[in-house]
Image 1 (tube, rainbow, N blue to C red):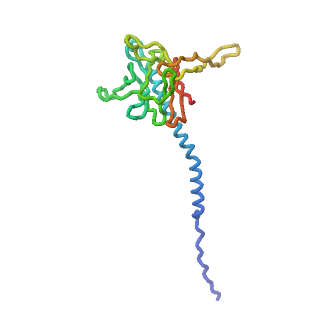
Image 2 (image 1 turned 30 degrees about the vertical axis):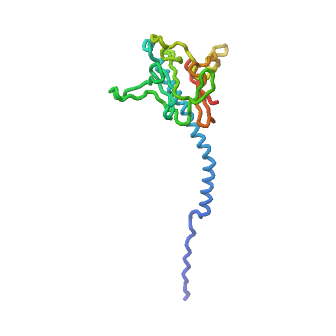
Image 3 (image 1 turned 180 degrees about the horizontal axis):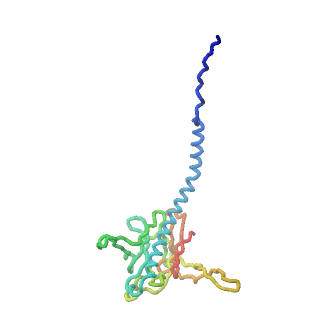
Length: 242
């Protein structure tokens, strides 16, 4: 009789990665992450910086919209405007909509109707990255300390220096000014000729240096990113990196 010997039990080969393979994969991941971190941080910094310009743009748009809808008779001693504020306690800079004649006349709203719970209707934080800089009368630009403000004429929405003329409270300021660095904005228009409608661009007259500020910009803390702010006499706002 032939005897059968049992076959030895051989364990199946282990599945998965070896320790060496895991270390290689982890090393590749860390290497790629190290390459992408600067780009990600750059994108985040740019987004935070641009949000500051967006905040100022929203305040400008809301104040001008309210001015365009306002009746001139309601503008005897008050106007809609914008204040750019750097708190003295080191708080976050912000842009806010005004209803009055000075930078402290913040437009307030009462949500509950009880006259006690007031809040700013149009206050927009510039964040901690975009810091406002300004200069007056063509001087050297420096970080803004305190506040600056300007207003908009009713129905036209053009920027003016004062919400009400000093010593003449029966009328609002009608001297249209530009805010920020003087420039020459380009505006599109259509013209007709024998070939049909043609699109052109034309330059508006260069505005004079503003009595509010001859330079207005946002800059990061290291002054490596700058964005110039200009509000032209037509009410157009322009934000341009320089």
